[in-house]
Length: 228
Image (tube, rainbow, N blue to C red):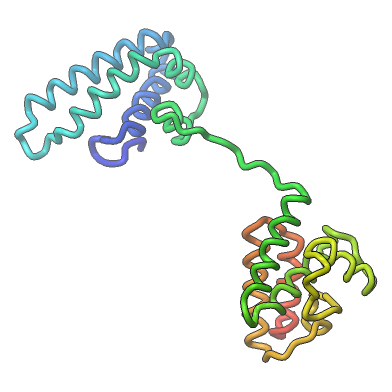
């Protein structure tokens, strides 16, 4: 179950196959010492590599498999302590194996701060304002930012002040009300087009991970489409 194909011809699948074998033997009390097991892995990989080189002219026996086994044998020898530590874990992922094999750094995505979200929204709104016919989309994006209460603004004065703080005083909003709700914001488009606009905004908020805004937009879309 750890192999990509019948012969397990990727570095990751071969190493995970050895890991699975070690765990099975551990359970059967046949392989307690990880160092001894790795000695066997090196020998098996080396012997398998030689065998496949000998029978490489037969179609069923892939020469690639010989190369992979030879590389794994050398890799285990060079990174023995790291592999031993990996094999002693109760469970391992492909990412952990890839990191060990190829030096790929496995990093958890850093949680976004309020400033991160605000900066992404500012960038998106300015982009909307740079495209003819998209200003109202930028207004609605800002309106849903306020609706999510990431930035507190409840009166018309607060809303305009929040806009000027984020976007600057040189760019006036095309709709000074700056509400998110389609029934409150100025709209000169039909319901079908408006739903497409809201869906675009919803996808953007979903992409950046602002789930509260996504929930509010979805509720407005349901109301507009008659689902709510």
